[in-house]
Length: 592
Image 1 (tube, one colour):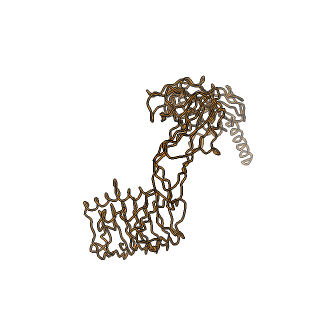
Image 2: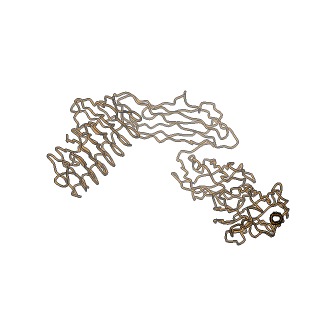
Image 3: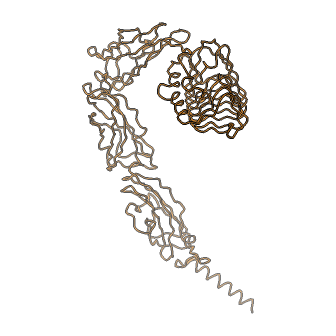
């Protein structure tokens, strides 16, 4: 009898459980927690929103599923602020397919879409909420979006603006690219409404664009601005404003160079290289060639222009047009918007000094001349001599000099020089263990500042060393294994020494190595002098110098920031002068 009652009880319990599952008013609560979202309704698709631009739309589709065994009725589908208040920037719209109506059958899914249209720069902290009638809570999905005025549509990349000629020569074309950086197409309402360049000396003639009413995600379109320049010559700072159909303004600062040399019949000199003083000869008294490339562009949007002839007139030293490389040739019909080049080679006989005062004449359409002025000074190679550079006069006995600090660890021995810096650490008779033979520690600010100024400021020793024209380039080379004689060597970047560098000459030989970056002497590497006096050898660093452990170095090192001698590195017959710091570690240093 007891077993029969127990079985009846289990059966009733089972049936009640089924009734509960089918009752839409029952919450699937467990351990005091509301789990209705787990048993009644759930998201099977929650899309990602990206940051937005004010005035543009993003629409994303959500999918929800009825997890109960019966048809359920929607109580609401809505978007609200995180605090529960209504947000007017967001709304529910019908999805493309399977739109959620008023009910949802057991086990089925449906789609609805959320559209967001921010009207001001703001942070939108939103909640998407969906709830069935009779359930105690809604399922939610958060949306966090930052809306700004420039995040969705941008002018990119910043354009390279060609030079513009003065107003009496016609108009020039500036091309700008508009890009949609959002994840969805944006509506421009209509084509771009207004284009303006804000500057008193520039005038916008008009604008043409290839941007339609919409711009797809990641897509670009171009606008072409025709401008004329005022009478001023030089660099003009301006702002490009593009006002979109939604009222959003895109702004881009630009610099436009107004040339003194003008275009003719729509043809302008769009690339006009500057010609610095020209070094005619190298250290071996061989000729040097300098090449100038001028680019002519036809800014006429419709018509081709004919280049009737191209000639060069010399009233100073001679130079010539490279016919093999020039594309602006006699009889060329330069199409609308097209460009061609004039290549000029300066190849002067050595030794020579003088002035280049020449002019290229381009005849356009057989009637109008376009003039290109070429003026420069040709300088002779100046070979440095020991009397040109007086380091001792600048620094006195401070041949170990740091503008800020000199720090030593280990048994460093410095001979025949004063150790000078605002703060000197690690030398007797202060802390040790460094030893100075034939010199003293100087921490006097007046003395230090005067010595640093004499090297690094104005027309100091550093400028004298850098003013000598480079005769041989070393960029990208390694000094190891090289043998260098008299001359000025240069590297536009860092320079390494791995192995042995040999410097040859006599007592009158001066060798200058100019380095815009850092000098690194690798472990165990060395500089060896053959006949050259160490006081006439200069390594000039625009950054720093580092001597590896066990390396041997001869000559003067001048570093604008720091000089570091690793453990056991020796500076024999040389100076170490740094704009900021010298770091030593158990080294041997002897002054020349």
